[in-house]
Length: 494
Image (cartoon, rainbow, N blue to C red):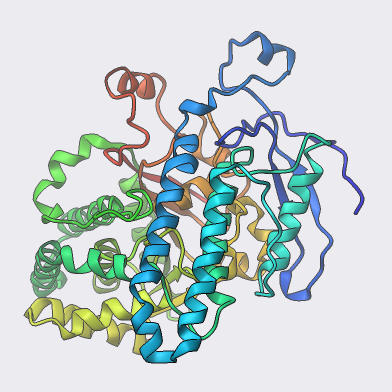
């Protein structure tokens, strides 16, 4: 394959958040459904973070302080822990596999564990990233992405676990975990993360009961609320959905991350920790859309989901409020098509959660579950998943890699992107200066008005006021990775 030159290098893009690598690539593909293997390459600019660096002024690369980065810690410590837990999960289900599938199930478990053990060794010893060997629908896109990473190496060795963009190798690990199961029937549909997601749900029961009770009480009088009261309730449930994003099992390497207490009790105290608060803009957009709507033109809100468990329930409550308050006519949920990042929501998680709520012996939990099942049957709630959400590409390439998905999102009045991984993909996972506008960092990804609801768990953040980051950094050096701070960050489409 011909090697592309580095023309058209965009000088305003900083480097990807990284473990060690200093060059990155974004690959664009035609519609994957057409099976076309030709790609068009665009290379990100290699700019150091420090604006006063002599190297920066000369246009050379500045060596990153990688071994102290959060990316390095993630690859070195957290990812091996997740792989170890995954292997342990398969070990513990050996008897179950035997009961369901006989010796074929046990042999499949052994092969999957061998695959994952080899993967863990490759990671820990910084082996080269290898092409996918399965024949799953997305394998071609993944391998083409790796090809162009290798083309950038200029003979200096191909991408390896500690010398590649953090986002890429992290996504790659989860895709390899999926392959370990998918290539080994009859256990190919086993979700190695299911137990942790279920545990998060059950251990968050107190918070879920409190939230469902609050919401059902609210519904009794929602039609009588004045506009100001309706706005206040919208802001409350937005914040519950925001702080529900703390419940991330990939961040805790699978350790308990459930919501133990009702977040409604402390929302007011949490407001100062929202670094960018665009809730007023969201309210104005939805109110104006509601006033303009006609019988033929419905108001649609899309929620690009993150974690199952309590966070998913908080997203359901927000979605139901949008319908009940007539701020929206339909809500589309976007989940993952394969188990992903330990606690991300799949279709099975989505349906399982609603069924658990329906079957609960608490009146308001059960009522919520019954109502939400009804929303799905009526078509005012729609669940979708798409292969693109589990590719390594950032969202600025969606229009070319997944034009069908991009076209669908363009039909929405508002896109709500939940969580840290979505934020990293929205902004290209780069080491932006914190004051760079969100709109700029989106790099022309503007299918519709969009908003990120995210608690900070990685060192990428834009759209802050001058001096805001420095002030927090002085007293809290780990403010970007602690999950203590959040953003409700809005961008209007072009």
